[in-house]
Length: 197
Image (tube, rainbow, N blue to C red; front, top):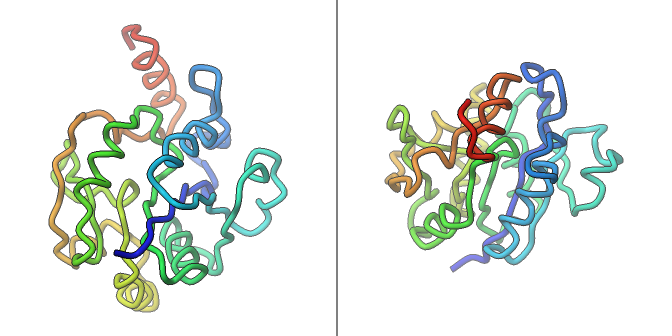
């Protein structure tokens, strides 16, 4: 079985949030710090995915990094750069805007890993579609992902749909709720503190 490495996607521009989502604080820690701590027990090595110009950012500079090699591909650029940097590894890929993600949800995904498939992903508890940014991508997925990008497409969810990857049921329905706006951030803060939104 290929070794499992970790990739935390922190190269986004956070335009809807208006602030760096990786730096948002939850319970006294930045989201990037929290996500790196969550992923570390499940992988042999963990990296932060950054876009060009972010490598010297103090928050991201604390961790090993993989810089995007292509622009305008969104999260797919990070996944492809990681696969090209360490082609022998499978990648546990996480978005850095999942403040309700917990250790049990990650452990469940890793236990369900099927290296015979191009990827292992959760089924969204909201719409039943694949969750591409809490998923494991096997080395064998690289050629198809690269071809997908070369054809002008950049949505990893659509890639997983097209690849007909079997989906894993989420053990905790809100664990993969992401935070894109100030209102989402306030709701996540309330949920994590046990307060009503």
